[in-house]
Length: 487
Image (cartoon, rainbow, N blue to C red):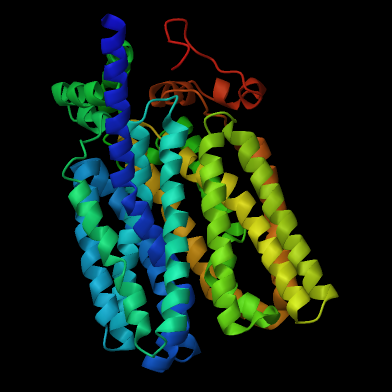
């Protein structure tokens, strides 16, 4: 009977954790849809609103600039007001700003609405991974947090498919409004989902609400893990409360927090200089110029979305088995090689079907490495490295920088292509990727198979921490003897 009861309890906790992951990651779905929809909607916006080149750039980039500030400030809001409440606010804001963008009568209002929508996108990009990291157990954290990455690329795929269908079968100057408006539906689902989401136990513990934290942990952990993890959470929350108020200044107040911040900023920048959003935002234009034509490129872009979803799903499974460090190094090497080949193909071929097919094949190869390794590892590392009371602020700063680099790439990529061509532009990304590989090799820690509390304790030990020793990079995990082997 005891064994049967234990099995039933474990099944119940897993089921509840799946519900938490599914509903909270609708924020990631909105993130993906809103960043992907512009790819197909922009040509129709251009005709409907008579956009010039500068206005096209503003409409595209306004969301990215908003996302940078949303990431910066929403992290602090979630530290103060709670992860669950912040996600609920984001659901309402997603709905309102999406509706405003869809009905915008002028270019100026559209730009403002896209900027406000970007605040929501940036907020979701910080809050959802942090919430999932704090809800998941150490052994499941990689898989649970990476589910958000799968939802992001799923949102982009939905945007590509809906753009192609609406643009082909219901073509008209106003069809872009329906493309944009579809994002209100997952916003509604996200809001209703927050009705069943519990608050993060680690956030509750940081505020001294220990009984509530224990109650939440009891719903998502089996009995044999409950007391040990609760004790760890309370111990670390007490130490953090006594040593820090959780503000941005505290990020640079200690050598160990500075080290985490530098690593986090490096990882955030590297994700963007891989060239991913040059592909995500301009693939239709690149493929059309390569030889597919506009309509063919619109449908061909769906292949990018399919590969992204498949790769992110694979990456989610790999994170439970493979260490973070080699995954990120392999992914960056793969993306850099793919862009190098695209540049060489551009030099060696003329526009036509051969170039178009080779471009598409190399783009999908690029996205397989990107979404299968760089994407999931980036968001996971950023969500798990920072100490509890600095987690929202630390991730907010890193994701702010990530979105600013994203904004600059989105704004200047067409300019670079017009000046030095597609091959020269991608060669720049290859050089930047090489520099990123050097940075990761030297500075990136290994965090797999460690609880959030163990990570924080090891970062605090200084420059000789196990996190930065070669043993950590080769799979060695320093675990106290009192820990369970599954921690």
